[in-house]
Image 1 (cartoon, rainbow, N blue to C red):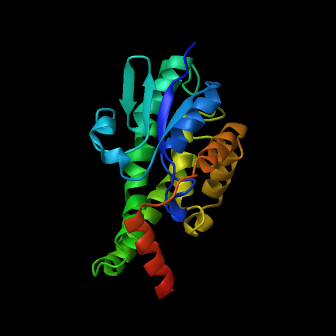
Image 2: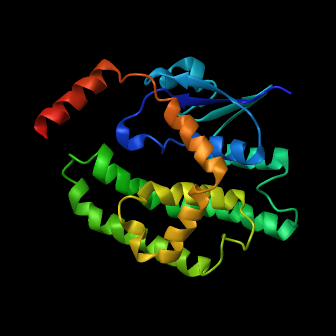
Length: 231
């Protein structure tokens, strides 16, 4: 049986290591026991026409299996789960709830987290970033509080079975795991710890980290050098 191929970067800034969304696809593939190949892209190549045929927005990851080409990590994870009959419960209602949680992770919980990344990383030097940060943090805590109350003392979002909904939710929550945002929510912190302790996650993370063997483009290296001089 042929192996699917995913795309990933061969270099990202240190803050993005272990966070690029191909990790979510790697994790799903590891959970279902599916070997895969990786096509590594240097920074900038994702915007070339060849890759835009796979991903019209010039991003990673993508997934290719025979004639099937997919983009968007959530859609890829769902396809992997459906194809392999894992990460999705057999019961129709539980399956629908799993998909519901997949959408919730990407559409309800992740957006304010990405707003925080924009304000503190990508646009940190802009005059509007610092003033809007308190509102962004408030939205994050609102979402985390709501999720914490729903999770309660459950092991996973819908009970005792780890699903694709948990995979995506843990992947989203761990973006801020080292920034103190989970400190108020013991059950969410424990939930993320359970998810990231899974052997499949550990293999996926190790594989992603091992792939960062490239170098930044000259313009990015110049920017990094400038930041270092200013520190």
